[in-house]
Length: 135
Image (cartoon, rainbow, N blue to C red; front, side, top):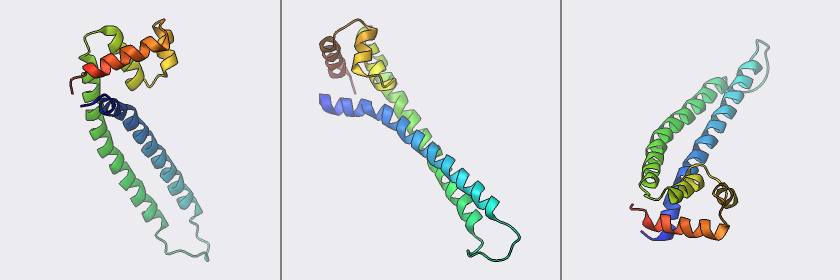
């Protein structure tokens, strides 16, 4: 696997967290919509609709929850695989750089400051660590 492919593989960790967050936000929106639909129902005659707004809202909510559950299971396995690969790095400084970048999502400048390094050193160590990954 080439360097760029390895970096893309490592980036899947943060991407999976973003996807879970987006689905969580979608669930929150659907729950809010479902609450608005139930509040709008009253005994007053009039108003259009087929009377299926609540069942549709509940159905959409349940579909999204199931999608999130499946994604959580898949993503947790993926993140565990990535974390295990990073932990195999024998040099602790390089392992820490990979952890900070791909698991914690830190910026290069923050990683450099944490280790009292200049950016060029961080990039060099990162490149060495990624090249050394056995995937």
